[in-house]
Figure 1 (cartoon, helix red, strand yellow):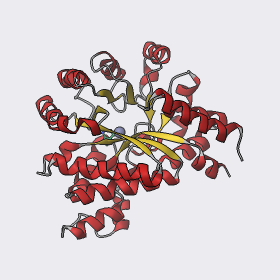
Figure 2 (cartoon, protein in one colour; figure 1 turned 90 degrees about the horizontal axis):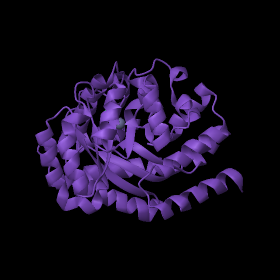
Figure 3 (cartoon, helix red, strand yellow; figure 1 turned 135 degrees about the vertical axis):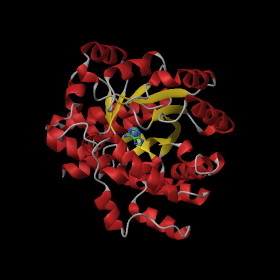
Figure 4 (cartoon, rainbow, N blue to C red; figure 1 turned 180 degrees about the vertical axis):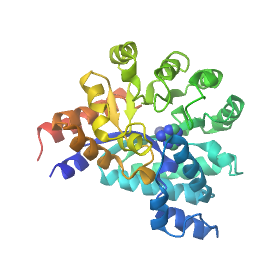
Length: 336
Ligand SMILES: Nc1ncnc2[nH]cnc12
Ligand SMILES: [Zn+2]
């Protein structure tokens, strides 16, 4: 069964917002824990409310959902649930985004957020054999000053954070707004990534590359609108962390048949498959692979290349990448 083969295919996940893995079941459990009322009558009603017109209509529910996350234990439970799901789907390595401002703005301490997440990641390694890195995302609808303040708060925890990223409402908040923060982050030794070309134009992808000096672009699915950019991404093998189900749920493309991931792959770009906000978009990484396999007539060789790209574009060391790809190659070429 191809579904099982996809599940077992060794892979890395590089674009997952931990707050976007908050399943309604856990949302209700945490609301109970803190005696909070939710805007949904039931788990089923929450699922039914997850119908989005665009990125902003999703972000409104995503930030509201995150209100139930209050204690270190909550952040631990959230992360642990994700790691278990990921492990069941053949994820050997994951690079997780977290949005500290979503929580510090409501009075939750940075320390509470990061300690709960970090503790789960440590246990993910020892108990589930999943390696991980953590990436701090700045909310681009907030000011550059707020992002700088958040970076300062993160410095005492730098050993736990591999890099910084940029997410939230893209249109009207170009990467150039955050040049100074990203300069400071790189100066401190953080790697950099940014969401670009999800809803925003190819110019935002150029800005992320030229001004923020990103090691990867998150989404980047509007690249085909700019042939020069396509050439550049191919030549420099700048990875795009693509999230197919997210793009459909947020109306970036009408149907999966129109999704450019195969076009990007065939053009020689370094693209990988990721879940973005799996609790909201109807699937984790396996479901994302399965959906594009069915809609775009991908071969098993294509799926292998996508999995290989996920390790190649990760922030693992060169020797860790070699080891992961050797495992993938054994799965692909010498099964059994
Ligand atoms: N797909 C997405 N784009 C921008 N910001 C996000 N935050 C969580 N998911 C996001
Ligand atoms: Zn994202």
